[in-house]
Image 1 (tube, rainbow, N blue to C red):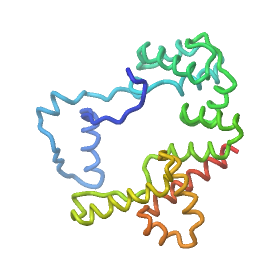
Image 2: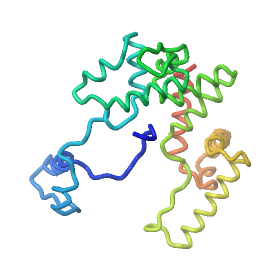
Image 3: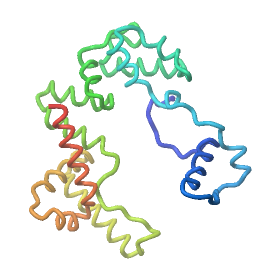
Image 4: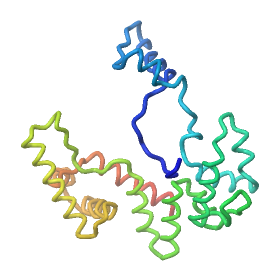
Length: 238
């Protein structure tokens, strides 16, 4: 809440989730459930139910969409939900939207700007939508869309090491080669998104893509998925 960001943090599941997961074992026939935590942990550390998503995430996109759809104040709608979010979260979201020039004021009295309407229509993350909007204003729309697709990709395509699977020699070899490949594609730009864009362009130009992936320690499945994400984003936004 204080950072106004979505952060993945390790936490206990809820008791309701534990019950739901146990139910999966009974889909085909009766079975037993073995949980790798104590009854004390279940009773003392797990909430009965998980908090609603509206209580756990920033509301920038939600407020922007409400402003675009309703053309009126969004706070009454949010407070009328089954689990209304705290006012601090709402106020932080208004301040963030004003900071990104998506609202004219950092409050519910603010009107949605042209950039705000554009970002809302894109249906992407607010920060990435602003990035694309600025790219269009500066005449580099294609590059901005491509970089936004790269930054939205959840996992880098480079080979992953695991000390539980790889021997120390293999582990060190993979780590060193992946690092060298990253430095090659970074080309002294000191930017991981730019390095991924360079890798993607190089992959597209390769005649034998499978061999290229092997030599560059890159997962063929993930970089193909990244290429597909870039293509879909570019087609949708142009």
